[in-house]
Length: 289
Image 1 (cartoon, rainbow, N blue to C red):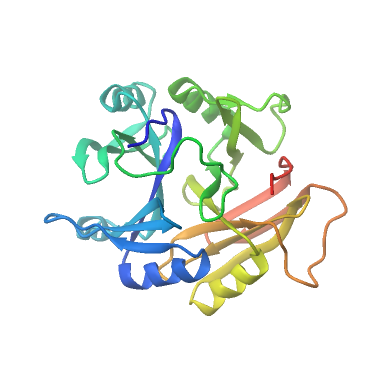
Image 2 (tube, one colour; image 1 turned 60 degrees about the vertical axis):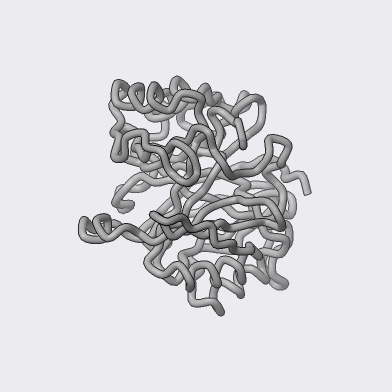
């Protein structure tokens, strides 16, 4: 059991083809898959080595009828899920699934006031131990919010979870806002372009060689939407979509041979990838690899 309040602790892929998705991410990220189905729910646990890192399940039929598409959902661990869900409502967010007992703990699917979806969990029965680092292979190493307005939404998450702005980020006009919990930087927030239809969270999976992983995305039936590009000292990222249409991202220490490297540890871009668009400048801390 993991007790990691106010931090992302579990990740779940809702998809239209569980078997194909399991094979795809096993090939691209190196995850193993273990059947943890119950009498009421078909459920696959994804593992990095022996460590459970996420879940995989069918996108519910009701969701499909309402137009839901395959997607990754990140769970933030909290102590009191009922009170946290109530706070989200009071602060202008929405609760799509009220706190409910499930196979992974007590869960609730929610949205922030700008309609980016995420989830809450208490009493999590799976997940990485607190000592696990964000830079470990096969883990989620970065969490990125594409917000309607990142300056306005930060207070919602800060007051709800105690997340803090990076001390070095003080100018509200800066493009990218880093956020941390208990002194550890967890990710960043940016304002999406008007062409992005819906605010969303994007999760970055750690791989050892991003050039090789990018090739596996393509050979496995997914698509590279942007990258690989270098953000900082030997830290590369790529934004992708899996064969069923779920967005995800990769980050790794090695780039493909022949890829042009920027001269500074920052990247300026103006790009549209799938349904996601971004522009501006991002500066990330040097990875611990």
